[in-house]
Amino acid sequence: MSVPEARSDAILDALEDLAYSPLPGPDDLDEALLEGVDSPLFVAICVFLSNAITKARRLETVVSSGDDTSALLIELSSFLQEAGCPFDEFEKDTFAAVRDLTSRINLLEWLCSEAQTARMIRSQTSDKMDVATDFGTSAEDRLASVLSTLGLSDRAQSTTSEIFSAITARIQHLMKQAGQNYIEPPILSHKLSPEQWAKLEDINAQLSEEYAVRRQMLLKRIDVTIQSFKWSDRVKKSLDELERSTQPLRHTMTTASDVDVHDVLFASRDLLNISKTSGAAVRHATAKSKIRGIFIGDVPDRGGRPTEQRAPGMMPAFRKRTVTARPQRNKRGNGGGVGGGGRNSGGGGGRRRGKKGGRVQGGWSKS
Image (cartoon, rainbow, N blue to C red; front, side, top):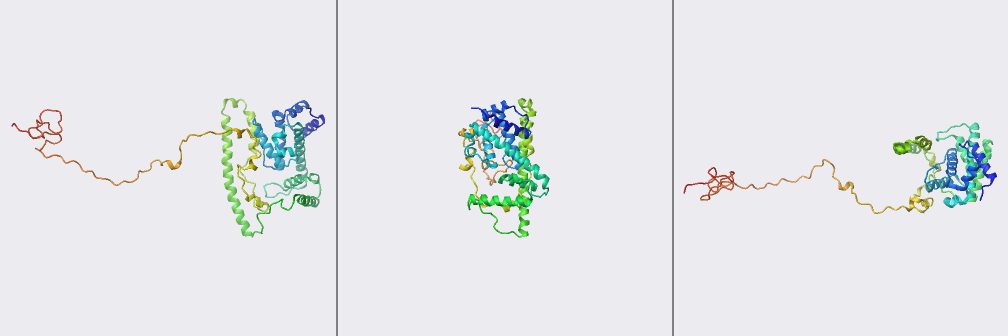
């Protein structure tokens, strides 16, 4: 099965427009599409396009390249779900979809069109709106994200009233199609007083500060881990490649939190439902991961439990002193002290054990 020339050329034109470098040739792209995830070029293009969309639309999922194909497909599956991929085969099973040539071509075409659309919206809306808010991002970025999500990218050059009228009409139409219970009711069902808002801002500030500390610790672990890789003699030969693969992702990681008190207004009650990390919904994307076939056997008990340890320098428990009776020494003339011979005993006096005589302590007479 061959790659249609017209579709391959369209993908190349889109990659050139998006400044993908180095731009592959037509034959290289056809070979990459035929090989799929086994081709480093196909993987690199998917990573480039998905991360461009993530940056433009401010998504959360970042697809990283690597030797582990299973990990790559898991990240790609999460990204496609978050980005709203329209192809059902990728929503059902990404692992099976990437094995089909037509699905791979559809995927690259959709990624290219989404990346181009996101870039066009940002460039067009940035000239018309320059109203900055304290939400952590600009108003034009949020509006561009709404238009892209609702499929109204062609309305970016309309007036403000026309844009919001189109958004309202589209949302009402989608709500009728989705049904009454599609969106969970909000957590906040009543108005807050100014004092309550102030208290909420104080709580958010404390949580953000704690989050920043935790995030800083994790980022330090990442930096130390990357630094430890550089000590390897094998990695020292390719330090530039390591920097190119890690630094772009590392620069996107910050300690600041983008959660604001206004997010309380958008929070729905489904956030109160905590899903287990081992639940079926979570394991759906990792069901075919290679790591699931690895089982850890019985691990020997190495101790280390805090309850079994005694703090260093701890004083022993107090015990009352017990007095033991000392043996009384025999009086002089009645046995010669310790081991001394008595009368007619032949001597053996006292502490001079093993020597002649015994006249110091033992009782002695000529008869």
